[in-house]
Length: 386
Image: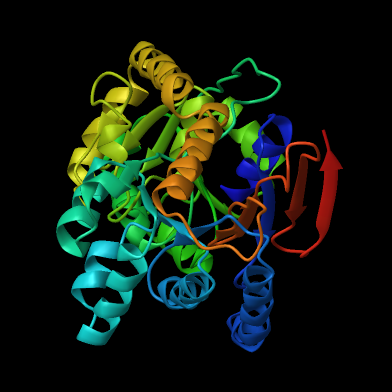
């Protein structure tokens, strides 16, 4: 999401200066060892008095712990922050937390100037379970860019079924494989690809055990260009997840006009209308999934109709350009609703923390507008005047 956001804010005129700040690495050891230095650097940025706002992306477990530290620094230096909830397992995480952890979570959410969520189900959760006033919560679904340049679909035959994501039981991969080996599906002509990391050796063995070795591939993670090529060729996108928030993979598949088959978890039912822009199938029900897949594999006109409807739905609500304008509006609300004492007369703005964070700042004055960014991964600063 940060990759898309960076590209979009660079291509649109606006008065904000973005700085992106990374909070962790793929390596757990490296993340732990670098955490104090990153926290110190962030505190120095807040203490400089140059920031108007911090945008913090938060998920469960380690993400919540890290972001609570960054939020505490924001409070210390009177930098308001917008909290953006990601991660589909937050209700379970909150329910399983002890009193101390729950207090930490509540402080993180209740101290935010604005709380952004990905759907109405998450608005209800943050309002009812965490206690955030509803007037401080906004639904801002994820978004991705439309394919550029627009590509003509080259759907292959037999139909190609594609899954993109972590190959894990929480993503419903077991349910999918069980559905594909059901007699009503097995006897049909089709191919499937499971693209993503995870327990690949285990699932490859499972594929062979179920007799699907010649039809189902699990190649691992693929480069963006490879995924793009795959989405052009595929007809059906499957996401049989048990837990989700609002997955980017689904929106990307919609942007290419694939027919989505999904589960009613997280904010997904707010994106897909069953029988109109895709199919919604019960999570964990392999027989129901087999029935849905058989129906699509044997009716390509239905696949085409649902795919076109999903693509139209994407263009209406989930394209990144409109997302950025709504996000900037939230920054303005956060700044106006949480006036902060400043060490100078300059106006400032936000920084994002999360899987990646961006510091956004307004120009020092209207005569010298500038946009400045720190790459989340390289901590490199770019200046550009306009």
